[in-house]
Picture 1 (spheres, rainbow, N blue to C red):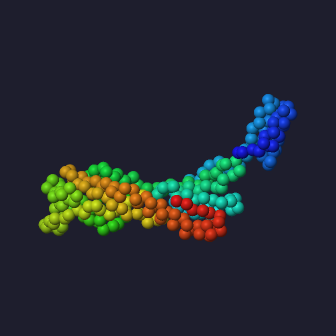
Picture 2 (cartoon, rainbow, N blue to C red):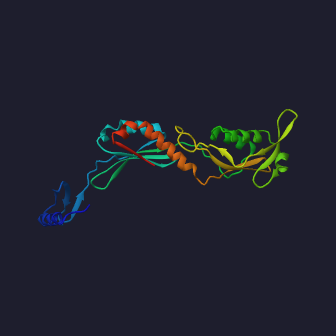
Picture 3 (cartoon, helix red, strand yellow):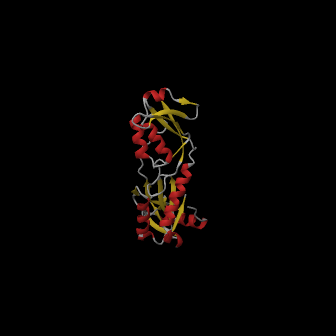
Length: 247
């Protein structure tokens, strides 16, 4: 806090007059002066003690709409990452800003870059990824793969071709696409999961792995989707100037 020369002089005069200590007000602020003449600004403890933690975007929307005690103040909703949103209050006269709400998405742990066995990869693709054409191709390959097919795979360094079962007694050669377009669950469930490119590789032991191959561009799309959701559901508060959404 910056104080004028007059304020500093006034505090000095009062400190000289201090006996056992007193509390004084200068320009609307309270100061404590102890028996030695030391002056300390008294900062009121009128901010929230704890942040409210939620796991959904709708939880953020519901809380922002229900905070009647903050209706006369600006509130800032910040999309900090694809899976984290925080809500802050206005900056007060003491340079403080309340963190009112913190939302962190609940997401599965996906093992990128790690080779998994046939069963593990099958479960991962079905439970941790949205349905896409490439996901269905990978499931078909994995579900019908035989050990000798991986050993004898045709590999040009980019794509791998393997022989899989296509019926009771028939087989077929399938070229696994690379890169593959997949949509893992990696942001809030209320918004569309971004689709991005992955490299899919197989090796002996009927193991396979997926490697991220978009340089993290999906994060910008996810954050944009989250901001759009919040903007749409807080339109009344935004139009009134009460809420500002930033990403």
